Length: 276
Image 1 (tube, rainbow, N blue to C red):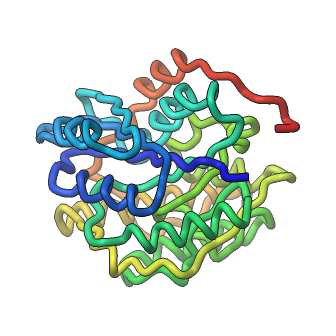
Image 2 (cartoon, rainbow, N blue to C red):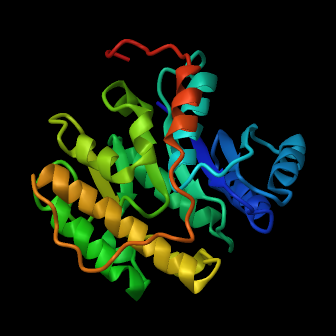
């Protein structure tokens, strides 16, 4: 059975790349997308709407005037998607992607989707073998040590990287709210006895051209990812991982969980029976 795949993209001032990302999604064969524009001052929203007017697949948009913070848009987009597809689809995949990707990565993304849907796991993430950024090694090491305390999620998984493929059946057991905090989300999934997770090692991040806004932004992102890894460690390992550095995360907006909770409170969808 062919299960549809819908992309969820958080975007803040990504007018330069959003159209390319959407084009590459089309090349990858997805069935639709949700773009969450939050706190931006450029024409990301206008370009997304213009693309949708001529797109071969539907692109829904959600707009927030204020920045939601790292990963909160991912949770908002999931609620938006579940609202739209629950009546028409008993099952679907959520494909999480960033809006600042460049390059012609559509065929590579199609291979990732084909692998994940064939495996039919709750989650398909990239493997640590896909890491090319030496600066990310420290953050990845914290995640690896955290995942050592459980068996459901492979220790080689790097859930903080995209693409990430999640089957909607998982949201019957794990609230989409937790996607706003990847550390909590991964830890809760890891503690589910019935959760299934696989990793993909054929993704080449050098072909994506993932841009950083500045050295300070890149450093803050690494610190944020490391902080999320420490969250996994504290939940699964039942103790705090000693800090190796101060994590200021200064260039990143704080996570606006109140906005997420308000949005989630208005979400309604039909959850199919467990047999479907």
